[in-house]
Image (cartoon, rainbow, N blue to C red; front, side):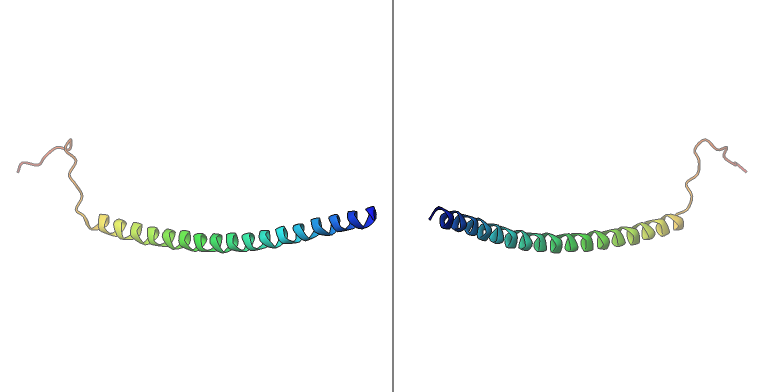
Length: 76
């Protein structure tokens, strides 16, 4: 009888471990999906940032140079 009880306890623990394993697999799948989404969002933001920097650089190149206040002025 004691042997049967011990086998039942082991079987119960194995069942609990299997349930926990399945839970961890689902959690891992959810975390992997979240990581994929966040990585995609990060890449998109980096791309947008690069495009914005390029536009700002292009605008800065079009601006006239500001005269240096310390430079001598030509009064002709």
